[in-house]
Figure 1 (cartoon, one colour):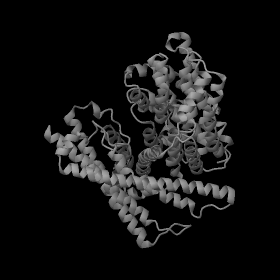
Figure 2 (figure 1 turned 45 degrees about the vertical axis):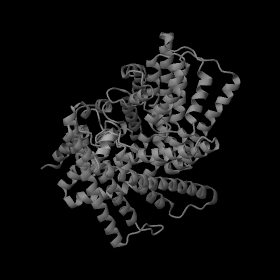
Figure 3 (figure 1 turned 30 degrees about the vertical axis):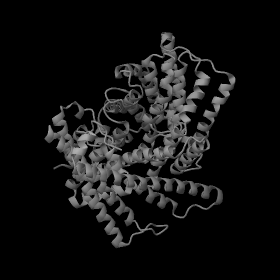
Figure 4 (figure 1 turned 135 degrees about the horizontal axis):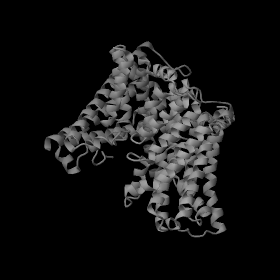
Length: 434
Length: 183
Protein backbone atom coordinates (compact mmCIF):
# COMPACT_ATOMS: atom_id res chain seq x y z
CA UNK A 1 0.00 0.00 0.00
CA UNK A 2 1.11 3.57 -0.69
CA UNK A 3 3.01 4.97 2.37
CA UNK A 4 1.08 8.25 2.17
CA UNK A 5 -2.20 6.32 2.37
CA UNK A 6 -0.89 4.39 5.40
CA UNK A 7 0.01 7.76 6.90
CA UNK A 8 -3.52 9.09 6.39
CA UNK A 9 -4.97 5.91 7.93
CA UNK A 10 -2.56 6.39 10.84
CA UNK A 11 -3.65 9.99 11.39
CA UNK A 12 -7.33 8.98 11.33
CA UNK A 13 -6.63 6.08 13.71
CA UNK A 14 -4.88 8.45 16.09
CA UNK A 15 -7.76 10.91 16.10
CA UNK A 16 -10.13 7.99 16.83
CA UNK A 17 -7.91 6.84 19.72
CA UNK A 18 -7.80 10.38 21.11
CA UNK A 19 -11.58 10.65 21.01
CA UNK A 20 -11.76 7.30 22.81
CA UNK A 21 -9.83 8.95 25.66
CA UNK A 22 -6.49 7.26 25.08
CA UNK A 23 -3.88 9.54 26.71
CA UNK A 24 -2.35 11.74 24.00
CA UNK A 25 1.24 10.49 24.47
CA UNK A 26 0.11 6.85 24.45
CA UNK A 27 -2.02 7.35 21.30
CA UNK A 28 0.86 8.89 19.36
CA UNK A 29 3.26 6.14 20.47
CA UNK A 30 0.79 3.34 19.64
CA UNK A 31 -0.02 4.64 16.15
CA UNK A 32 3.61 5.56 15.49
CA UNK A 33 4.75 2.09 16.56
CA UNK A 34 2.11 0.27 14.49
CA UNK A 35 2.60 2.45 11.40
CA UNK A 36 6.40 2.42 11.49
CA UNK A 37 6.39 -1.37 12.01
CA UNK A 38 4.05 -1.84 9.05
CA UNK A 39 6.08 0.35 6.71
CA UNK A 40 9.50 -1.01 7.73
CA UNK A 41 9.71 -4.15 9.88
CA UNK A 42 8.18 -4.97 13.30
CA UNK A 43 11.71 -5.29 14.73
CA UNK A 44 12.59 -1.77 13.53
CA UNK A 45 9.31 -0.41 14.93
CA UNK A 46 9.83 -2.03 18.34
CA UNK A 47 13.39 -0.81 18.61
CA UNK A 48 12.52 2.76 17.62
CA UNK A 49 9.93 2.90 20.43
CA UNK A 50 12.52 2.26 23.14
CA UNK A 51 15.14 4.44 21.47
CA UNK A 52 12.79 7.41 21.13
CA UNK A 53 11.61 7.19 24.74
CA UNK A 54 15.17 6.93 26.06
CA UNK A 55 16.52 9.65 23.77
CA UNK A 56 13.81 12.07 24.85
CA UNK A 57 13.95 11.27 28.53
CA UNK A 58 17.74 11.72 28.59
CA UNK A 59 17.78 14.85 26.41
CA UNK A 60 19.65 17.75 28.03
CA UNK A 61 17.56 20.21 25.98
CA UNK A 62 14.34 18.80 27.41
CA UNK A 63 15.53 19.16 31.02
CA UNK A 64 14.43 22.78 30.65
CA UNK A 65 10.84 21.51 31.11
CA UNK A 66 11.04 20.04 34.65
CA UNK A 67 13.25 22.92 35.79
CA UNK A 68 10.89 25.66 34.56
CA UNK A 69 7.89 23.77 35.98
CA UNK A 70 9.79 23.55 39.28
CA UNK A 71 10.46 27.29 39.20
CA UNK A 72 6.73 27.98 38.80
CA UNK A 73 5.89 25.53 41.59
CA UNK A 74 8.40 27.13 43.99
CA UNK A 75 7.21 30.64 43.03
CA UNK A 76 3.64 29.60 43.74
CA UNK A 77 4.55 27.89 47.03
CA UNK A 78 6.50 30.94 48.19
CA UNK A 79 3.34 33.07 48.04
CA UNK A 80 4.56 35.30 45.19
CA UNK A 81 1.16 35.25 43.51
CA UNK A 82 -0.49 36.72 46.64
CA UNK A 83 2.15 39.42 46.97
CA UNK A 84 1.89 40.26 43.27
CA UNK A 85 -1.85 40.59 43.61
CA UNK A 86 -1.53 42.74 46.74
CA UNK A 87 0.97 44.98 44.92
CA UNK A 88 -1.30 45.34 41.89
CA UNK A 89 -4.30 45.92 44.13
CA UNK A 90 -2.57 48.65 46.15
CA UNK A 91 -1.75 50.49 42.91
CA UNK A 92 -4.91 49.86 40.87
CA UNK A 93 -7.62 48.74 43.32
CA UNK A 94 -9.40 52.06 43.68
CA UNK A 95 -10.13 52.36 39.96
CA UNK A 96 -13.49 51.18 38.70
CA UNK A 97 -12.87 47.55 37.76
CA UNK A 98 -9.58 47.92 39.63
CA UNK A 99 -9.68 44.45 41.20
CA UNK A 100 -10.11 42.79 37.79
CA UNK A 101 -7.37 45.02 36.35
CA UNK A 102 -5.15 44.13 39.31
CA UNK A 103 -5.81 40.45 38.53
CA UNK A 104 -4.70 40.93 34.93
CA UNK A 105 -1.59 42.86 36.00
CA UNK A 106 -0.69 40.29 38.67
CA UNK A 107 -1.27 37.44 36.22
CA UNK A 108 1.03 39.12 33.68
CA UNK A 109 3.65 39.35 36.44
CA UNK A 110 3.11 35.75 37.49
CA UNK A 111 3.32 34.68 33.83
CA UNK A 112 6.84 36.08 33.86
CA UNK A 113 7.85 33.41 36.37
CA UNK A 114 5.47 30.58 35.45
CA UNK A 115 5.00 28.91 32.08
CA UNK A 116 1.57 27.35 32.41
CA UNK A 117 -1.80 28.88 31.62
CA UNK A 118 -3.81 26.64 33.95
CA UNK A 119 -1.39 27.27 36.82
CA UNK A 120 -1.60 31.04 36.30
CA UNK A 121 -5.42 30.95 36.35
CA UNK A 122 -5.55 28.58 39.31
CA UNK A 123 -3.06 30.48 41.43
CA UNK A 124 -4.48 33.91 40.65
CA UNK A 125 -8.08 32.72 40.91
CA UNK A 126 -7.54 31.53 44.48
CA UNK A 127 -6.26 34.98 45.44
CA UNK A 128 -8.44 37.28 43.32
CA UNK A 129 -11.88 35.65 43.17
CA UNK A 130 -12.65 35.89 46.92
CA UNK A 131 -11.61 39.58 46.85
CA UNK A 132 -13.82 40.35 43.84
CA UNK A 133 -16.72 38.52 45.49
CA UNK A 134 -16.21 40.59 48.65
CA UNK A 135 -16.55 43.78 46.59
CA UNK A 136 -19.67 42.50 44.79
CA UNK A 137 -18.07 42.19 41.39
CA UNK A 138 -20.22 40.74 38.65
CA UNK A 139 -19.57 36.97 38.50
CA UNK A 140 -19.06 36.95 34.73
CA UNK A 141 -16.48 39.72 34.85
CA UNK A 142 -14.66 38.26 37.85
CA UNK A 143 -14.41 34.67 36.60
CA UNK A 144 -13.96 35.64 32.94
CA UNK A 145 -11.05 37.93 33.75
CA UNK A 146 -9.28 35.26 35.85
CA UNK A 147 -9.73 32.51 33.23
CA UNK A 148 -8.58 34.80 30.41
CA UNK A 149 -5.65 36.24 32.34
CA UNK A 150 -4.22 32.71 32.46
CA UNK A 151 -3.59 32.98 28.71
CA UNK A 152 -0.77 35.38 29.55
CA UNK A 153 0.95 32.44 31.27
CA UNK A 154 1.84 30.77 27.97
CA UNK A 155 2.53 33.97 26.03
CA UNK A 156 4.84 35.82 28.40
CA UNK A 157 8.11 33.92 28.92
CA UNK A 158 8.96 31.44 30.28
CA UNK A 159 6.32 29.40 28.46
CA UNK A 160 6.02 25.62 28.35
CA UNK A 161 4.37 25.75 24.93
CA UNK A 162 7.22 27.84 23.47
CA UNK A 163 9.73 25.33 24.84
CA UNK A 164 7.89 22.42 23.21
CA UNK A 165 7.45 24.31 19.94
CA UNK A 166 11.15 25.22 19.96
CA UNK A 167 12.21 21.62 20.53
CA UNK A 168 9.86 20.21 17.87
CA UNK A 169 10.92 22.76 15.24
CA UNK A 170 14.57 23.13 16.32
CA UNK A 171 14.12 26.87 16.89
CA UNK A 172 15.92 28.84 19.60
CA UNK A 173 13.93 28.77 22.84
CA UNK A 174 15.55 32.09 23.81
CA UNK A 175 14.26 33.73 20.63
CA UNK A 176 10.79 32.28 21.12
CA UNK A 177 10.72 33.61 24.68
CA UNK A 178 11.71 37.05 23.43
CA UNK A 179 9.09 36.86 20.70
CA UNK A 180 6.37 36.46 23.36
CA UNK A 181 7.33 39.55 25.38
CA UNK A 182 5.83 42.37 23.28
CA UNK A 183 2.63 40.46 22.31
CA UNK A 184 2.27 39.55 26.00
CA UNK A 185 2.48 43.20 27.03
CA UNK A 186 0.05 44.24 24.27
CA UNK A 187 -2.42 41.53 25.32
CA UNK A 188 -2.15 42.69 28.94
CA UNK A 189 -2.99 46.24 27.84
CA UNK A 190 -5.86 44.98 25.65
CA UNK A 191 -7.28 42.99 28.59
CA UNK A 192 -7.06 46.09 30.84
CA UNK A 193 -8.78 48.21 28.16
CA UNK A 194 -11.47 45.52 27.85
CA UNK A 195 -12.21 45.73 31.57
CA UNK A 196 -12.18 49.53 31.49
CA UNK A 197 -14.60 49.53 28.56
CA UNK A 198 -16.93 47.00 30.23
CA UNK A 199 -16.97 49.07 33.44
CA UNK A 200 -17.50 52.29 31.52
CA UNK A 201 -20.55 50.75 29.81
CA UNK A 202 -21.94 49.29 33.02
CA UNK A 203 -20.40 50.70 36.24
CA UNK A 204 -22.45 48.26 38.35
CA UNK A 205 -20.25 45.41 37.11
CA UNK A 206 -17.30 46.42 39.26
CA UNK A 207 -17.55 48.75 42.27
CA UNK A 208 -14.40 50.59 43.35
CA UNK A 209 -12.12 48.93 45.90
CA UNK A 210 -10.87 50.42 49.16
CA UNK A 211 -8.32 53.21 48.93
CA UNK A 212 -4.78 52.32 50.01
CA UNK A 213 -2.25 54.56 51.73
CA UNK A 214 1.09 55.55 50.22
CA UNK A 215 2.75 53.33 52.82
CA UNK A 216 0.69 50.33 51.62
CA UNK A 217 1.55 51.13 48.03
CA UNK A 218 5.28 51.20 48.81
CA UNK A 219 5.00 48.00 50.88
CA UNK A 220 3.20 46.36 47.97
CA UNK A 221 6.06 47.14 45.64
CA UNK A 222 8.26 44.57 47.42
CA UNK A 223 5.99 41.96 45.87
CA UNK A 224 6.91 43.28 42.46
CA UNK A 225 10.62 43.41 43.19
CA UNK A 226 11.11 39.67 43.72
CA UNK A 227 9.10 38.91 40.59
CA UNK A 228 11.21 41.41 38.65
CA UNK A 229 14.41 39.87 40.07
CA UNK A 230 13.39 36.40 38.91
CA UNK A 231 12.38 37.70 35.49
CA UNK A 232 15.69 39.51 35.09
CA UNK A 233 17.68 36.43 36.08
CA UNK A 234 15.82 34.10 33.74
CA UNK A 235 14.72 36.08 30.69
CA UNK A 236 17.37 38.79 30.62
CA UNK A 237 19.96 36.09 31.36
CA UNK A 238 18.76 34.23 28.29
CA UNK A 239 18.52 37.43 26.24
CA UNK A 240 22.11 38.42 26.98
CA UNK A 241 23.43 34.91 26.49
CA UNK A 242 24.51 34.45 30.14
CA UNK A 243 22.65 31.15 30.37
CA UNK A 244 21.40 28.35 28.17
CA UNK A 245 17.64 27.69 28.63
CA UNK A 246 18.34 24.77 31.00
CA UNK A 247 20.75 26.86 33.08
CA UNK A 248 18.28 29.77 33.19
CA UNK A 249 15.52 27.40 34.36
CA UNK A 250 17.79 25.87 37.01
CA UNK A 251 18.92 29.24 38.36
CA UNK A 252 15.32 30.51 38.28
CA UNK A 253 14.09 27.47 40.24
CA UNK A 254 16.89 27.87 42.79
CA UNK A 255 16.15 31.60 43.14
CA UNK A 256 12.41 30.97 43.60
CA UNK A 257 13.25 28.37 46.27
CA UNK A 258 15.63 30.81 47.96
CA UNK A 259 12.92 33.52 48.06
CA UNK A 260 10.44 31.04 49.54
CA UNK A 261 12.92 29.90 52.17
CA UNK A 262 13.98 33.46 53.04
CA UNK A 263 10.35 34.46 53.50
CA UNK A 264 9.72 31.25 55.48
CA UNK A 265 6.88 30.40 53.13
CA UNK A 266 8.35 27.15 51.82
CA UNK A 267 8.48 24.55 54.56
CA UNK A 268 8.72 20.78 54.15
CA UNK A 269 5.06 20.10 53.11
CA UNK A 270 5.09 22.94 50.54
CA UNK A 271 8.50 21.82 49.25
CA UNK A 272 7.29 18.22 48.93
CA UNK A 273 4.11 19.31 47.16
CA UNK A 274 6.09 21.48 44.70
CA UNK A 275 8.40 18.55 43.87
CA UNK A 276 5.51 16.10 43.40
CA UNK A 277 3.54 18.54 41.27
CA UNK A 278 6.62 19.14 39.12
CA UNK A 279 7.18 15.40 38.68
CA UNK A 280 3.58 14.81 37.62
CA UNK A 281 3.49 17.70 35.11
CA UNK A 282 6.97 17.00 33.72
CA UNK A 283 6.29 13.29 33.32
CA UNK A 284 3.02 14.05 31.52
CA UNK A 285 4.82 16.40 29.11
CA UNK A 286 7.82 14.10 28.57
CA UNK A 287 5.56 11.13 27.71
CA UNK A 288 3.77 13.28 25.12
CA UNK A 289 7.08 14.48 23.67
CA UNK A 290 8.35 10.89 23.43
CA UNK A 291 5.06 9.75 21.84
CA UNK A 292 5.28 12.66 19.39
CA UNK A 293 8.79 11.59 18.43
CA UNK A 294 7.65 8.01 17.66
CA UNK A 295 4.73 9.40 15.68
CA UNK A 296 7.06 11.84 13.91
CA UNK A 297 9.29 8.95 12.78
CA UNK A 298 6.25 7.21 11.36
CA UNK A 299 5.18 10.38 9.53
CA UNK A 300 8.68 10.83 8.13
CA UNK A 301 8.54 7.34 6.60
CA UNK A 302 5.14 8.09 5.02
CA UNK A 303 6.59 11.36 3.59
CA UNK A 304 3.20 13.01 4.28
CA UNK A 305 4.63 16.30 5.66
CA UNK A 306 6.87 16.78 2.64
CA UNK A 307 4.21 15.78 0.11
CA UNK A 308 1.60 17.93 1.83
CA UNK A 309 3.98 20.91 1.79
CA UNK A 310 4.66 20.36 -1.93
CA UNK A 311 0.96 19.94 -2.73
CA UNK A 312 -0.13 23.04 -0.83
CA UNK A 313 2.75 25.02 -2.33
CA UNK A 314 1.43 24.16 -5.79
CA UNK A 315 -2.17 25.22 -5.07
CA UNK A 316 -3.39 28.42 -6.76
CA UNK A 317 -4.08 29.97 -3.33
CA UNK A 318 -2.00 32.82 -1.88
CA UNK A 319 0.09 31.89 1.22
CA UNK A 320 -2.10 34.18 3.35
CA UNK A 321 -5.14 32.08 2.39
CA UNK A 322 -3.38 28.84 3.41
CA UNK A 323 -2.28 30.47 6.67
CA UNK A 324 -5.88 31.52 7.27
CA UNK A 325 -7.05 27.91 6.87
CA UNK A 326 -4.28 26.67 9.21
CA UNK A 327 -5.24 29.24 11.87
CA UNK A 328 -8.91 28.30 11.53
CA UNK A 329 -8.01 24.63 11.94
CA UNK A 330 -6.05 25.35 15.13
CA UNK A 331 -8.94 27.43 16.41
CA UNK A 332 -11.46 24.62 15.85
CA UNK A 333 -9.27 21.83 17.25
CA UNK A 334 -8.12 24.09 20.08
CA UNK A 335 -11.71 24.11 21.29
CA UNK A 336 -11.70 20.35 21.86
CA UNK A 337 -8.06 19.63 22.66
CA UNK A 338 -5.42 20.72 25.13
CA UNK A 339 -3.07 23.34 23.60
CA UNK A 340 0.10 21.39 24.35
CA UNK A 341 -1.26 18.15 22.90
CA UNK A 342 -2.59 19.91 19.81
CA UNK A 343 0.78 21.50 19.09
CA UNK A 344 2.61 18.19 19.53
CA UNK A 345 0.19 16.41 17.22
CA UNK A 346 0.08 18.91 14.43
CA UNK A 347 3.45 20.64 14.27
CA UNK A 348 5.25 17.70 12.57
CA UNK A 349 2.66 17.90 9.77
CA UNK A 350 1.93 21.63 9.58
CA UNK A 351 5.38 23.09 10.19
CA UNK A 352 6.96 21.96 6.86
CA UNK A 353 3.93 23.44 5.05
CA UNK A 354 4.35 26.78 6.82
CA UNK A 355 8.07 26.83 6.07
CA UNK A 356 7.43 26.04 2.39
CA UNK A 357 5.15 29.09 2.28
CA UNK A 358 8.03 31.26 3.49
CA UNK A 359 6.70 32.31 6.92
CA UNK A 360 9.02 33.11 9.83
CA UNK A 361 9.13 30.11 12.22
CA UNK A 362 9.33 32.30 15.34
CA UNK A 363 6.34 34.39 14.20
CA UNK A 364 4.37 31.21 13.48
CA UNK A 365 5.18 29.91 16.97
CA UNK A 366 3.66 33.02 18.57
CA UNK A 367 0.59 32.89 16.33
CA UNK A 368 0.02 29.22 17.16
CA UNK A 369 0.38 29.86 20.88
CA UNK A 370 -2.17 32.68 20.64
CA UNK A 371 -4.64 30.67 18.61
CA UNK A 372 -4.42 27.57 20.81
CA UNK A 373 -4.68 29.88 23.83
CA UNK A 374 -8.13 30.86 22.58
CA UNK A 375 -9.07 27.17 22.84
CA UNK A 376 -8.04 27.23 26.51
CA UNK A 377 -10.94 29.57 27.29
CA UNK A 378 -13.59 28.58 24.72
CA UNK A 379 -16.27 25.91 25.07
CA UNK A 380 -16.59 22.96 25.21
CA UNK A 381 -13.16 22.05 26.59
CA UNK A 382 -11.80 25.46 27.74
CA UNK A 383 -9.59 24.09 30.51
CA UNK A 384 -9.07 27.43 32.26
CA UNK A 385 -12.82 27.81 32.61
CA UNK A 386 -12.97 24.49 34.46
CA UNK A 387 -10.05 25.54 36.63
CA UNK A 388 -11.94 28.71 37.60
CA UNK A 389 -15.14 26.70 38.08
CA UNK A 390 -13.20 24.53 40.53
CA UNK A 391 -12.26 27.62 42.54
CA UNK A 392 -15.72 29.23 42.31
CA UNK A 393 -18.08 26.21 42.27
CA UNK A 394 -21.12 28.43 42.87
CA UNK A 395 -20.75 30.22 39.53
CA UNK A 396 -22.43 28.38 36.60
CA UNK A 397 -20.20 27.44 33.65
CA UNK A 398 -22.46 29.48 31.37
CA UNK A 399 -21.73 32.61 33.43
CA UNK A 400 -17.97 32.05 33.18
CA UNK A 401 -18.10 31.45 29.42
CA UNK A 402 -20.21 34.59 29.08
CA UNK A 403 -17.49 36.56 30.84
CA UNK A 404 -14.85 35.17 28.46
CA UNK A 405 -16.18 36.70 25.23
CA UNK A 406 -14.86 40.28 25.60
CA UNK A 407 -11.39 38.90 26.41
CA UNK A 408 -11.57 36.50 23.50
CA UNK A 409 -12.20 39.46 21.21
CA UNK A 410 -9.05 41.07 22.63
CA UNK A 411 -7.03 37.94 21.73
CA UNK A 412 -8.52 37.96 18.22
CA UNK A 413 -7.56 41.65 17.82
CA UNK A 414 -3.98 40.86 18.86
CA UNK A 415 -3.81 37.87 16.49
CA UNK A 416 -5.00 39.99 13.56
CA UNK A 417 -2.52 42.70 14.53
CA UNK A 418 0.37 40.21 14.57
CA UNK A 419 -0.68 38.79 11.21
CA UNK A 420 -0.59 42.20 9.58
CA UNK A 421 2.38 43.60 11.53
CA UNK A 422 4.66 40.57 12.08
CA UNK A 423 7.54 42.88 13.10
CA UNK A 424 5.86 43.18 16.54
CA UNK A 425 6.94 39.57 17.06
CA UNK A 426 10.17 39.40 15.10
CA UNK A 427 12.12 42.53 16.06
CA UNK A 428 13.07 41.47 19.60
CA UNK A 429 14.17 37.87 18.81
CA UNK A 430 16.52 39.31 16.18
CA UNK A 431 18.57 40.79 19.04
CA UNK A 432 18.95 37.53 21.01
CA UNK A 433 22.34 35.91 20.98
CA UNK A 434 21.30 32.45 22.28
CA UNK B 1 -3.27 9.39 46.21
CA UNK B 2 -6.25 7.73 44.55
CA UNK B 3 -7.91 7.49 41.21
CA UNK B 4 -10.25 10.44 40.75
CA UNK B 5 -13.89 9.65 41.52
CA UNK B 6 -15.74 8.95 38.30
CA UNK B 7 -12.57 8.29 36.31
CA UNK B 8 -12.15 4.98 34.52
CA UNK B 9 -11.34 2.33 37.04
CA UNK B 10 -12.51 4.37 40.02
CA UNK B 11 -14.50 2.48 42.66
CA UNK B 12 -15.87 3.51 46.02
CA UNK B 13 -13.58 2.69 48.99
CA UNK B 14 -16.10 0.24 50.47
CA UNK B 15 -16.36 -1.55 47.16
CA UNK B 16 -12.59 -1.56 46.95
CA UNK B 17 -12.42 -3.37 50.29
CA UNK B 18 -14.86 -6.00 49.04
CA UNK B 19 -12.61 -6.67 46.06
CA UNK B 20 -10.05 -8.48 48.21
CA UNK B 21 -7.21 -9.30 45.82
CA UNK B 22 -7.71 -6.11 43.88
CA UNK B 23 -7.52 -4.08 47.07
CA UNK B 24 -4.24 -5.84 47.86
CA UNK B 25 -2.94 -5.02 44.39
CA UNK B 26 -3.94 -1.39 44.85
CA UNK B 27 -2.18 -1.22 48.19
CA UNK B 28 0.95 -2.66 46.62
CA UNK B 29 0.76 -0.16 43.77
CA UNK B 30 0.36 2.74 46.21
CA UNK B 31 3.43 1.63 48.15
CA UNK B 32 5.45 1.07 44.99
CA UNK B 33 4.36 4.45 43.60
CA UNK B 34 5.36 6.06 46.89
CA UNK B 35 8.92 4.77 46.43
CA UNK B 36 9.03 5.50 42.67
CA UNK B 37 7.99 9.12 43.00
CA UNK B 38 10.56 9.70 45.72
CA UNK B 39 13.31 8.36 43.51
CA UNK B 40 12.08 10.79 40.82
CA UNK B 41 11.97 13.60 43.38
CA UNK B 42 15.52 12.95 44.59
CA UNK B 43 16.71 12.86 40.95
CA UNK B 44 14.95 16.19 40.33
CA UNK B 45 16.66 17.73 43.37
CA UNK B 46 20.01 16.34 42.25
CA UNK B 47 19.48 17.69 38.74
CA UNK B 48 18.69 21.16 40.10
CA UNK B 49 21.75 21.08 42.34
CA UNK B 50 23.94 19.94 39.47
CA UNK B 51 22.73 22.67 37.08
CA UNK B 52 23.19 25.40 39.71
CA UNK B 53 26.66 24.10 40.67
CA UNK B 54 27.62 23.97 36.99
CA UNK B 55 26.46 27.57 36.38
CA UNK B 56 28.18 28.94 39.50
CA UNK B 57 31.32 26.92 38.75
CA UNK B 58 31.43 28.08 35.12
CA UNK B 59 30.64 31.76 35.72
CA UNK B 60 32.64 32.44 38.88
CA UNK B 61 35.45 29.89 39.06
CA UNK B 62 35.90 28.88 35.41
CA UNK B 63 35.29 25.31 36.59
CA UNK B 64 32.27 23.66 34.99
CA UNK B 65 31.17 20.37 36.53
CA UNK B 66 33.01 17.68 34.52
CA UNK B 67 30.46 15.87 32.33
CA UNK B 68 27.71 18.09 33.74
CA UNK B 69 25.55 17.91 30.63
CA UNK B 70 25.57 14.12 30.42
CA UNK B 71 24.95 13.77 34.18
CA UNK B 72 21.93 16.09 33.91
CA UNK B 73 20.67 13.89 31.05
CA UNK B 74 21.01 10.74 33.18
CA UNK B 75 19.11 12.35 36.07
CA UNK B 76 16.47 13.48 33.56
CA UNK B 77 15.74 9.82 32.69
CA UNK B 78 14.93 9.15 36.34
CA UNK B 79 12.87 12.36 36.63
CA UNK B 80 10.74 11.44 33.60
CA UNK B 81 10.50 7.64 33.97
CA UNK B 82 10.00 7.01 37.69
CA UNK B 83 6.76 9.04 38.04
CA UNK B 84 5.01 7.53 34.97
CA UNK B 85 3.08 4.98 37.06
CA UNK B 86 2.21 7.58 39.71
CA UNK B 87 1.00 9.96 36.99
CA UNK B 88 -1.11 7.21 35.38
CA UNK B 89 -2.52 6.30 38.81
CA UNK B 90 -3.57 9.94 39.28
CA UNK B 91 -4.84 9.97 35.65
CA UNK B 92 -2.45 12.84 35.06
CA UNK B 93 -1.76 12.07 31.39
CA UNK B 94 -3.64 14.43 29.05
CA UNK B 95 -6.80 12.86 27.59
CA UNK B 96 -9.61 14.16 25.39
CA UNK B 97 -12.54 13.41 27.69
CA UNK B 98 -15.26 15.26 25.87
CA UNK B 99 -16.58 12.57 23.51
CA UNK B 100 -16.41 9.45 25.71
CA UNK B 101 -18.19 11.29 28.52
CA UNK B 102 -21.21 11.60 26.20
CA UNK B 103 -21.62 7.80 26.02
CA UNK B 104 -23.97 5.90 28.30
CA UNK B 105 -22.27 4.05 31.19
CA UNK B 106 -21.91 0.55 29.71
CA UNK B 107 -20.36 1.51 26.34
CA UNK B 108 -18.19 4.01 28.20
CA UNK B 109 -16.82 1.31 30.48
CA UNK B 110 -16.21 -0.99 27.48
CA UNK B 111 -14.28 1.82 25.74
CA UNK B 112 -12.28 2.43 28.93
CA UNK B 113 -11.47 -1.29 29.10
CA UNK B 114 -10.18 -1.41 25.52
CA UNK B 115 -8.21 1.81 25.98
CA UNK B 116 -6.60 0.48 29.17
CA UNK B 117 -5.56 -2.73 27.39
CA UNK B 118 -4.00 -0.68 24.57
CA UNK B 119 -1.95 1.25 27.13
CA UNK B 120 -0.95 -2.03 28.78
CA UNK B 121 0.22 -3.40 25.44
CA UNK B 122 2.28 -0.28 24.79
CA UNK B 123 4.09 -0.41 28.12
CA UNK B 124 4.74 -4.17 27.88
CA UNK B 125 6.46 -3.58 24.52
CA UNK B 126 8.31 -0.55 25.89
CA UNK B 127 9.55 -2.53 28.92
CA UNK B 128 10.69 -5.41 26.74
CA UNK B 129 12.37 -3.24 24.12
CA UNK B 130 14.07 -1.00 26.69
CA UNK B 131 15.48 -4.12 28.33
CA UNK B 132 16.72 -5.32 24.92
CA UNK B 133 18.27 -1.92 24.15
CA UNK B 134 19.94 -1.77 27.57
CA UNK B 135 21.28 -5.30 27.14
CA UNK B 136 22.72 -4.56 23.70
CA UNK B 137 24.49 -1.44 25.04
CA UNK B 138 25.75 -3.39 28.06
CA UNK B 139 27.19 -6.09 25.81
CA UNK B 140 28.78 -3.56 23.47
CA UNK B 141 30.21 -1.64 26.46
CA UNK B 142 28.93 1.74 25.27
CA UNK B 143 29.66 4.62 27.67
CA UNK B 144 29.17 8.40 27.78
CA UNK B 145 31.81 10.56 26.08
CA UNK B 146 33.12 12.72 28.95
CA UNK B 147 32.80 10.66 32.10
CA UNK B 148 32.70 7.16 30.62
CA UNK B 149 29.46 6.35 32.46
CA UNK B 150 27.68 3.31 30.99
CA UNK B 151 24.28 4.00 29.44
CA UNK B 152 22.70 0.66 30.19
CA UNK B 153 21.72 1.17 33.87
CA UNK B 154 19.55 4.13 32.89
CA UNK B 155 17.91 2.21 30.05
CA UNK B 156 17.27 -0.69 32.43
CA UNK B 157 15.76 1.90 34.79
CA UNK B 158 13.35 2.93 32.02
CA UNK B 159 12.44 -0.73 31.43
CA UNK B 160 11.92 -1.22 35.17
CA UNK B 161 9.70 1.89 35.41
CA UNK B 162 7.33 0.41 32.82
CA UNK B 163 6.47 -2.50 35.13
CA UNK B 164 4.58 -0.46 37.76
CA UNK B 165 2.77 1.28 34.89
CA UNK B 166 1.64 -2.16 33.69
CA UNK B 167 0.49 -3.00 37.23
CA UNK B 168 -1.50 0.25 37.42
CA UNK B 169 -3.12 -0.47 34.06
CA UNK B 170 -3.94 -4.07 35.09
CA UNK B 171 -5.55 -2.78 38.30
CA UNK B 172 -7.54 -0.17 36.37
CA UNK B 173 -8.65 -2.82 33.85
CA UNK B 174 -9.75 -5.23 36.59
CA UNK B 175 -11.78 -2.48 38.22
CA UNK B 176 -13.53 -1.73 34.95
CA UNK B 177 -14.29 -5.45 34.39
CA UNK B 178 -15.59 -5.83 37.95
CA UNK B 179 -17.75 -2.74 37.46
CA UNK B 180 -19.25 -4.09 34.23
CA UNK B 181 -19.84 -7.60 35.67
CA UNK B 182 -21.59 -6.18 38.74
CA UNK B 183 -23.80 -4.01 36.58
